[in-house]
Length: 68
Image (cartoon, rainbow, N blue to C red; front, side, top):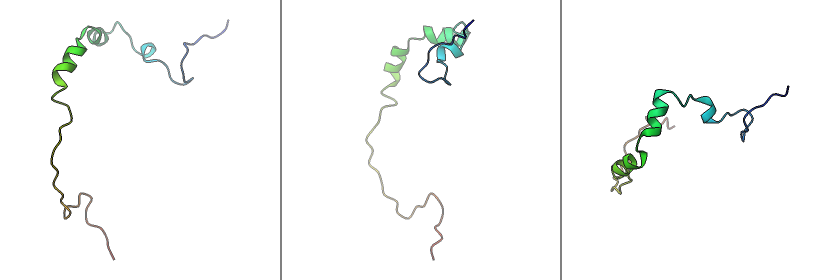
């Protein structure tokens, strides 16, 4: 009897729908969430905003350099 395996693009990577139990309560909840509505409501909050930056040449976030 030949071994059968779901087709994937990469032999060592299984598809996500074969790794999770779609009957699990969190998977069921995720399928029932109104994702488009949620995304539309929070999109403006997380959108990029232009901000004026201030150069701080004396601030070294990585510590002092060991200069000879």
